Length: 183
Image (tube, rainbow, N blue to C red; front, side, top):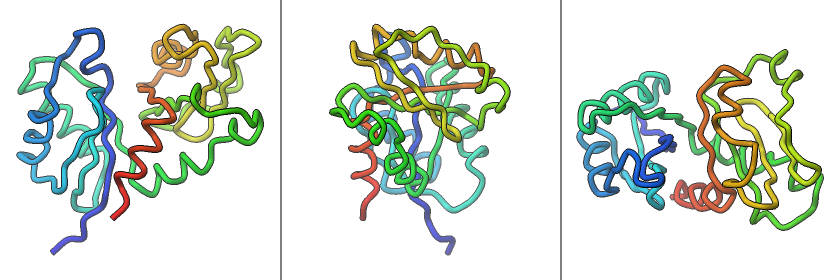
């Protein structure tokens, strides 16, 4: 019997402003139909914690994306991190250390791959004096004091400037998902 690994799937753009509606009970059933175990969701924005046989994450992302396309008729970007990677993301937030402020306006943008270093070096997001971001590996850590909805540090900007897929979660969501990965 293969060992199971705890994973987190971040689905981009479902249940946002009525777009790409997916009921969480249906999403759990879809993941279970793919053979995944201990499937659970967090809020309505496409966060799924599950267990799967250790193996290639790229194949899992593709399989989940294809299953959603077949069931719902639309494309959804799926970005997966392991529980260990999520733990590292939370522990490695450089903005918590630099700014030393309350984390209720922190966000994490997850990329589908490590961005090209030259593109990151040339990244100019047009943030104002209060906003901050730092790209670290396959994530960007954001501080948006007026909230993510009013920020220029959004998925579309990162995708356009870095040429990759991205999805963003609040710091609260990241902490809750990390808690859900604990045995």
